[in-house]
Amino acid sequence: MRDEPDHDLELTSPLVPLFVITNGRSLPPEHVYERTTLVSAHEGASAAARTLSPEARLVLDLVMDGFLSVAEVAAHTHLPLGIVRILLAELEESGLVITRKPVPRAERADRELLNAVLDGLKARFGA
Amino acid sequence: MNQDALVWCLVAAVAVSVAAALVLNRRNKAIAAKKSQVEATMTQKLSETEGQLATVWAELQQHKAQHAETIREAEEAAEESTKAVLKGSARFLQSLAAEQLALLEEIQRKYGGHAVLGDLLEVNHANAQMARKAQGIAVMCGAPLGRRSKAASVYDVVRSAQGQIRNFRRVEIMQQTGFALKASAVSPVALAVAELLDNAASFSQQGSPIEVTFQRVQKNLCIVIDDAGVGMGDEDRQKASALLSGDHRSRLSQLGNQPKFGFPVIGLLAQQYGFRVDVTGISRYGGVRAVVLLPEELWTEEETAPAEAPQLSSIHGTPARPESAARTAHGLPRRGARQVPIASVPDRDDTAAPPVAAPEEAGRAAGRSLGAFQRGTLSGRNLAPAPFEGSDDA
Image (cartoon, chains in turn brown, red):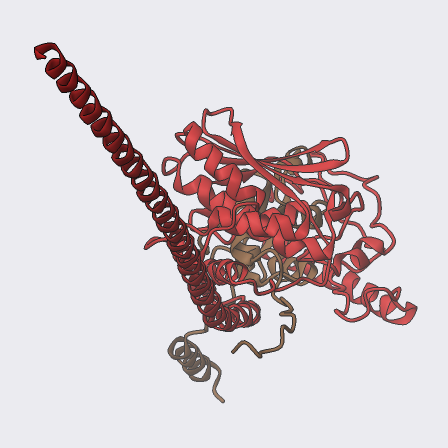
């Protein structure tokens, strides 16, 4: 073992691990911040930005001028979606951002009901 | 007649006594001579014996010295061979931990949108602590530290250190500075600060804060760590100072059953990389104030890009969005046609190249139509009136 050359070990992992960026906060449930949930900065949020971590400030900067979807925020910051969700939860808790839920997907039509309507129409107007 | 006889008698007596005196005198002389002779022999013998004693004593001393030397050599050899064995293992652990950290980062990005991310973050935390221990053992054995190839802000270096201790949430970094550590100093300073933070966390109450501040004092940059612990006694303080200066090298075999690597590791690092660490101060909470003093060779005043988002410069580098000339009644910017497509995620590879015109045009059009679509959807669905963007589309 002594003969092992003292080659240098290069550390490739990012210097600041993700759990430090989120300060150990737990992941909010997925439905709170869906990919298409829109986020915008609250009024006067820029004043509070100085005390934020650089990453949270970055997210806030991105949504300062209008609404941006959660997925877009993640893409811009190159942070994993979950990390962005945690940062958004932190920001929303301190009242710095507001969110708008995405438009819910149209409910699946009731096939039986439609069939009944079709039958009714057929009976009425003939087919 | 009678008188004659008396005289003769007297004469005879005198003669006899003279003879006796002579004889006695002679004997005395003989005895004296013999005595001095015996004395001389004795003295000679004594000095001989003394000489022998001295030789034996010298030999004894020599043996003793040799013995001590042999013991020392044996101890050193044992230390060296222990170190060699440990060094190999530590290097193995070190590189494995580093590999795992890189792997975990990849996995975290891969499953970034998944609920498993929460658990992955915890695994990452445990692994970061293991990596610190492995590095500490490696330093004690004289193995090189893993190195970083990029300079980093001192703020990020402390955050990196923060991630390497158990109760990292207690650490509060009070400032964000633009000072950057040179690449070669990043790993050692991070490890030293991690050991100091760990020490601060272990010797203060659960839940009490550990505050980190930065100060520039003349040509040195200081990382100041304040804890709210019980502080140290004079003896502990002296011992700590000796260890931290790197002058007193503790042996692996002296570290005991529950080895305290912290200060010896910091001392070795400080000596090797040319910074100083002092723990004799008293924090504002009455605990220990630890100061890492970085000489100007180790840092620059240049701003470095945040470690996590080096690509962002390209976003901010693009022409600014329409300046908030138009605002809604509530002070939020009006959502006009964007000059720059907000959804244009720059390619990871071309950070430097400015965006080409054609895709930008296309993106702009796409952005506009998407925006219109969004507005249409919102008004069409007649959602509850948005509280902060009221008169936008009116």
